[in-house]
Length: 599
Image (cartoon, rainbow, N blue to C red):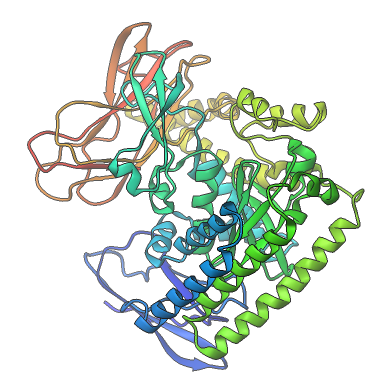
């Protein structure tokens, strides 16, 4: 069947994705004639089965900035002459940097990291995970007074912090699933870990079973889309890819006092915004100096086509900062950054038509001039106003770890606020009411699901519908109170092709702080796609050293990607109580050729 739709497009290039999974034999999306300066799209979808005769929803993403000219690359790959020109530019860069300190020569690696975010395959992989339609709906329902690009970025940070990436102080035990582990050292990465950019591997000891778990510090953004855990390095790396996938121009910022974050360009404000995914912070650049109490030195930002020293955005004490910048002269730093910046512009411009390259160069020069004016204003307003969110210590990570790093807070008040907001982020401080409203909406949906599930359970047990409805509604009040104290966790993905009947640890919940109200679980999963189906997930109730019972969670894993949902109030008829642990395990299945993929 064929569907046709015309959507006006204000700009190019475009990224196109389906809002939900579509089973189709063929999908063709192509531009039609240009009308009044706008491009129309035709979407032909040949469905694979007998789905309802409803056009699939197609989302079309343009670049966030009107000055961003970059087009989707040709499937044929880069032109040989472009590659040769890039090699010439690199040789010139190496010559310019040859007389500078080695540390500055190595900064060119920041550009190579930023170049990875331009990989269209990785961007498509990221877009598969980002709930674009839901985030757009939150922005429109919220009726924000700020520019759409800023409001949408706030929702991206909310989703990334609360629902996608997970902070890891010490990894869960891969053997028993316990969270009670302690890092005891490091070791060299194996070949597979090296292939994903891991330079070191932390080793954690489990205090429950005594076994050790490896925690590779991956540096590959594609791997991190699957891994979804780590500390600030992993968070910022993956988040910068997410921003580029959504069409934002993005910089990866390296703070030499051991932190990393992202900057995004917003047309509505005509400037770069600080975006720290660990802290769910947007446009709060002074939080490190005023809130955390960091003694900043160098903050260097790298994008696909430029590099900038952005330290002055993050301090109002620049003269003091200069006294700590003693590794090399300021003149050497300026020479290095200028050389790297010129190389980035030339390399990126070589892939564009000459006119587009000149336009882009002009846009970067105008932005640079505005940014220098911003820095100049910062230098002259040392005692200027500070946002409430910039007066909070670090909220991400274990409190003891933050204290040891000297980042828990610049003063007692900042420390108290940081402890109060631990793992919550700064959104509720910087945008009062916005983030809590979104979380409340999610909780309302969870409550609705729980009440409906209770109603269905009572009906299945033989109660009449009116009685069941009354009992389910009566339980809504304690359930709402339980949700306020609910613990939510995201388990790292499983990609297991080792055919075996052995059960493997997935995660564990507990020891419980009180009697269980409900355990709500959701997965997206599939097996190898053919043959016998054997993959399963089970929950086990453990009390003391004994296993009291177990229950199957989602049935058998499907061949094609599907969702599984389950809510448990008991395990094999036993209600989990304070001190109990619920362990989740999975089995791939033996016999050869079996796989299990779980998100």
